[in-house]
Image (tube, rainbow, N blue to C red; front, side, top):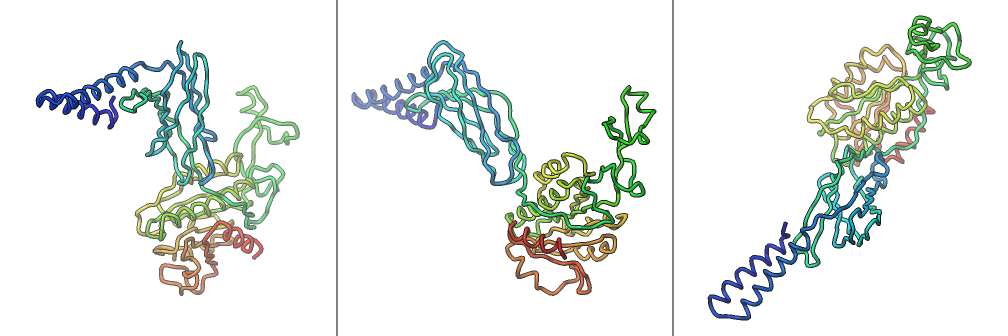
Length: 391
């Protein structure tokens, strides 16, 4: 296909050639013929399809917002002659990333590396990769797609936080501990026997069915549970950056609990987002879930507290919201007695100013003991959370 320059050269050549011959201007006709000949040569140059092998990977495929990620393309010339004038173009989200390819001799391979955008959370489609053969004048090109699209997952940024103490016990082995008091254990799952397991927990029926010694894995229900309400309403935040910071705060709180193998219940105003039981890999699952959270157009966050209102009791409730519309936040007072401790993070550039504003009917009342902590950065979250942990 012709480039914009190629089409312009072709049109100019036709006009000059026609006008030159019609009016007897030999120089114009010669210039027009040169333009037409240039376009024809460019098309012939770009016409042969390159015989190449192309493989693309994303390194790494999961990153925190703002961290570096690269596309790595390995090109191999599987043809019998040197290939020149090639350019690799990879599609990333809504933009193209062009990378020039040096001449490739027969059998030679070359690795291309280019940065991928990671400024925003979400699933970023990458590809399919396109190889373009372009003539030296840039008049014509031939494009050929290679492979399929991959996905770069940009997750929230997190900072290391301590777990807020709550619950009746704090076992370091997490909610799936077999060393906890029997009175606080409930059945969780079956797993294969490992040396040292209590033989009284062998499940003989499953052992007979599978041919492997299976034991009951118990859950300690007295361990700290974290219920995290993330307000995703568009009107709750003054800007997109404030919302991104709120997601980062929620991710930091959730990951801290999951890292200690404690259960996390993540809720939005539209309903539950994810529930983890404290098993391995929960932290990664929480970050993956928060990577794709988007702002909603709902008017109130009150529905997010319907589930916590039926909470069995104990644990920590953390509410992450912005500095804008507060509609529905008064429901925190309704669920406050169900938890050992409750804290609210008000995130945004205006957080410090709004923290001193008198409570409204849509906010926890003056008699409430729910602390409202202003947050304007992850560093401020870390300092405030450490103070909250020793309160």
